[in-house]
Length: 394
Image 1 (cartoon, rainbow, N blue to C red):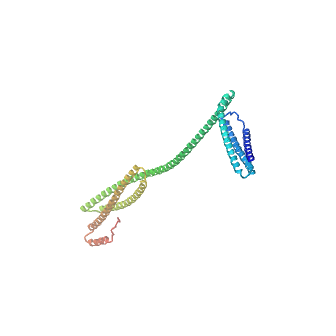
Image 2 (tube, rainbow, N blue to C red):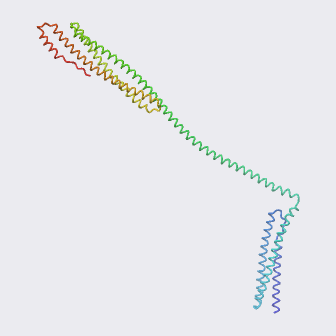
Image 3 (cartoon, rainbow, N blue to C red):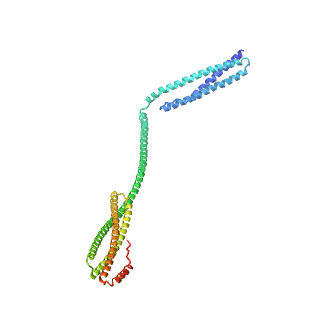
């Protein structure tokens, strides 16, 4: 019994010694703490220490696991009665050692961190005065380079914004140019159309001037024809009055042979003048027809010119056309009157011829003796019946 207890105690002492050796070896493997020049290096050292502590903790935890295996092997060699007791005691000892080791590791890490935080300002203050300007110049140079880069970047950004604004302005100008070019094209088309319209209006004005000249010529011609017709009428009336006077004189006084010849000559001249009057009337009718044709053409031109934009030209042309229409109506009335006068002249000529025949008959009766009165009367009847009365077409 005593042998068994002594063996268990020896095994526990051996396990404790093995755990201490493992802790010392892990502490020796840790790197020495160097003075931190900057905050970044201190943080890196802290990270390295934490990694080392984690590794040491892993190794410490691994040592008890190996000792537990060793003790389990020893307990396996012991008897079955005391194996459970030995195993419980060994696990209790291992747990106690593990808790102590964890507390020591935590305390050491907290102490190191506090020492590092306290030693940083001291190291900075205790540094050489020669290192301070270099350390100050380095960040100043870095700041200057950063400012220079910032300025260059700002300049490039401003250039980019300026280029963008220029491009937008150029696009707006191009749109404005397109709109203006379209407006210029439209204006050029309108100008060309207006020029064509002005040319057409000029041509129409020229035609209107020609029509006005033709109308003036027609007016003058109409006036001349009216004057001629008035003179012809007066002349015919005078002739008829003279003939009527001569006939009345013949009826009152006796008629001689010379007077009879004069009457025949006068009647022949009257017939000739009547033929001339007919011819003159026909000429007047032809002229009136030509004038009507000219008036119709003038009316057509006036209707064509009625679409002109100038209102004054329209009004003038309409007034002139109305005047010409009234003149045409008056001329037609005058022509009708002339035709009626011509019929009256023809009737007067027929009456004069009948008077001529009566005068011839009376002269024959006056010259022949009473014996030959019957023969002469028969001859006069024979001469009277075959003489046809000339009919003049109106």
